[in-house]
Amino acid sequence: MDNHEKILQEVRQALSELRQEEKAAGQEALGRLQELRVKYLGKKGEITQMMKQMGTLPKEERPSFGQKVNSLRQKVEEAFEQRKSELEERIKEKKLAAERIDVTLEKPEAGMGGVHPLTKVYRQVRGIFEGMGFQVVEGPEIEFDKYNFEMLNIPKDHPARDMQDTFYVTDDIVLRTHTSPVQIRTMLGHQPPIRVICPGRVYRTDDVDATHSPVFNQIEGLVIDKGITFADLKGTINTFLRQLYGEQTKTKFRPGFFPFTEPSAEVDATCSLCGGKGCPACKGAGMVEVLGCGMVNPKVLENCGLDPEVYSGYAFGLGLDRLTNIKYGITDIRLLYESDVRFLRQFR
Ligand code: FA5
Image 1 (cartoon, helix red, strand yellow):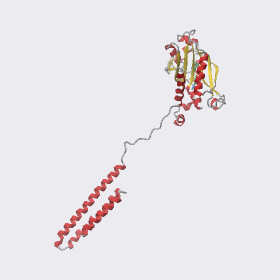
Image 2 (image 1 turned 180 degrees about the vertical axis):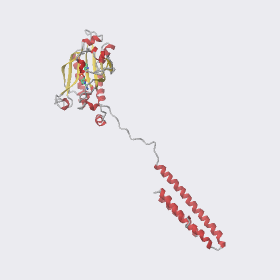
Image 3 (image 1 turned 90 degrees about the vertical axis):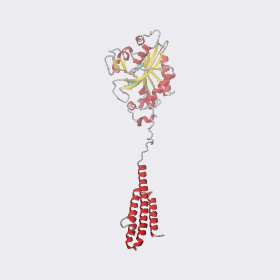
Image 4 (image 1 turned 90 degrees about the horizontal axis):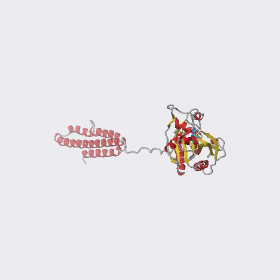
């Protein structure tokens, strides 16, 4: 094998070795390639040196020697050019792959939400009453003074108004203080038999503390028909509370006062947390007040155009927020409105 063939093979060998190295480092391989190029084709490179030898040869050998060296130089140059463009292509591909943005990549899964404890208890309460044949009706949160107070037998100068002070939009329009005005709207709009519950937000100028909020939720109940008695009221409330808090739940009907019911009662139920033994949630009493109720005052029936000699009925109003707190042993009503997921996550 002559010297030229040897050089060509050497170059090819070096370039092929470079291919292995280049797998690890693209840019470095390009540097190595340049070094090799200098080694053979640079000013002091082996092939350039060979050209310089030409002067030392006899005249007649020079053309063929020159041709051979030129052809070698061309082949080596081609080999280098080919490797260089291959290498540059590889570097470009690598770079593109590294910088690739996969637009099809899925974003991390959003956490699953859960039902708020107030909504959970509302759905449960609603389910229990629907099971007893009640329909759900709603009324506006901005209400006529007439429906919120006057037709419920709470005239302008009545002391009961002090207990339920609110925001007056005008002299005649208020933010409703309870869901009881929906009783009036229902009786004005429907003939008995009536059997409804009315859920909704209500407003009072109460200071915020562990058991009070200026905005809270009530569920009103109203039943009007012929021959409805206090026994029906008791039976319905007892059934409701036992379904909500458990069969072992005991109830206590204490005399109470509401201008729109007569007689009236406040109802206590066994504390569902301690089962009646007494705990911080029930302040040691073993029982907690859960709702107000009574027989619809004949005056209210008359205000709505119903004859109290023909019809009678009962009504009740429960505070959903407190009902929820008792059910889950939540000791501060504010937790229900703060939207703190660390708190809410427990109720999933
Ligand atoms: C009433 O609002 C009557 N309308 C209930 C009623 C309806 C009686 C029908 C008879 C017939 P009272 O003011 O007691 O009643 O409120 C009812 C319930 O709302 C209370 O038992 C309590 O659970 C809840 N509540 C009252 N004030 C607040 C408050 N500031 N924050 C949270 N819950 C409250």
